[in-house]
Image (cartoon, rainbow, N blue to C red):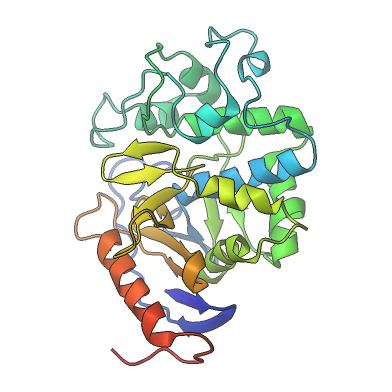
Length: 311
């Protein structure tokens, strides 16, 4: 757990890790394989927080002119696919791709497209093979692979190279790891590994509005509620949780399978990052409760407070 307030690390703690017990055949997409989960050397699996980092890379590519705008059409990047000609990059960023995709069942369920994609040879081809449906919010771990392909085509660089020089280096992040799909494309749906401190550092980027990384408007655009997702809202690969007691305000949150959590509170200049490993989600860190604790803590700290008050 790492907590930043007004740019300072005000709390940091590491807790004992419990390695998973291998079940079935080993491999990078067997989430019980202790060789791959949760740590590789000193960096921790981010799982679906990877999607939020991917969104930042899109913002950088827009600023640098590699991409035209979020309204840019997607179909020209995949000329062999039968995609809706009106589908846009924004539709992908907001999980409204109009592809028939089922990720609402257990990972072990044969109907789960997330798991089926990870077992396939060509992930992009698998995603594009799914039938179409009306464009609506439908959370999909396949959509970020389409965005990865678009970014790679637009920049002419691998995701590993682009993220290293354009995002991680400016933030002072030197240790990271990307899994790759069998076709060599970076796993942008869940394959990034960072330290917990560097995850918090990434979150703090969204408090600085630093034009050296991406245009400040990208931060505001990312945090705009674009589509309702049950009781929450969704922006550009950010979950937007209600800010307790403040109607119409949100706490941008990135969530990853197994207990990865990143909370950004722009109003309070606070970032909280958590990593853990609890596949299946039973007794996972409850995000709404954490938001309530963080907002209360921010109120107690107030401006200029240097330490975290005792519970």
